[in-house]
Length: 199
Image (cartoon, rainbow, N blue to C red; front, side):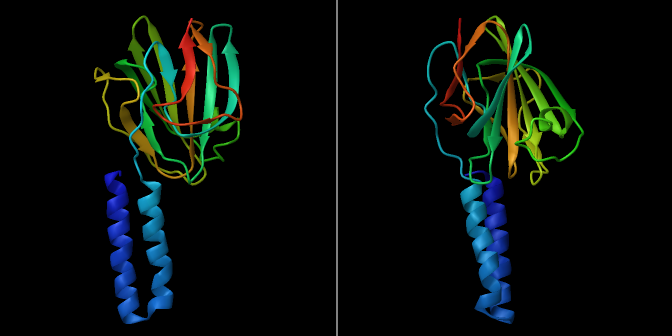
């Protein structure tokens, strides 16, 4: 579990206990429900990372778009609802060459415009003759993007790199050296679902 889940869970449970003592159980119940939801939301299960020259999904969720951005690049967009695991993972092994945070709007993350207009953190990982870029994108509810790595750090495919709190979106941009296997409607899991294989 992500540490934030424990903090929220303990804080809300403590608040529920105080309300129970001062007012009564009916008024405390919503706080205990929120505490349980936070513990569930911030879960962080282990994942088996597939071997070989593949791109693994950096996020749990539903593929909502696979779109050619130019003759040489393709964008895969993954929408995370509040019931998905929100821990993000590196799509490939390599070195983080760039991290860029962009201010923006907080539109509904499932919409196409969110890729260009929403607040986001864009990361590029370079390794084995390729570069893969992914963006952690805020949504209507998600207001905090967390990224735990720095430029120059080495990451392995499927390694935990951060999270987006509550509903959000992650975009992955791939070059022509990758054969896309993901398709709109697919449900994917961070670190274990394959989005593309090396040609």
